[in-house]
Length: 76
Image (cartoon, rainbow, N blue to C red; front, top):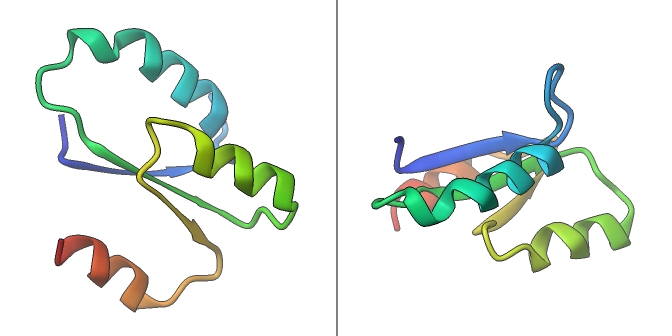
């Protein structure tokens, strides 16, 4: 698995929330867990809180984003 996953909420086959739900089910079988950052144009504060409260999500990046948002993640 990659060490970082950038997850968009609006994907064509499976949305980001469905991915997080499926990931939660397989997580116990994964030895090395990637960091997951959600990227979206979401503006509803309740949706952002739901993303930030998810125990599998390491961070939220709002679109449009600055290049520095990604650089800071890779510098960790």
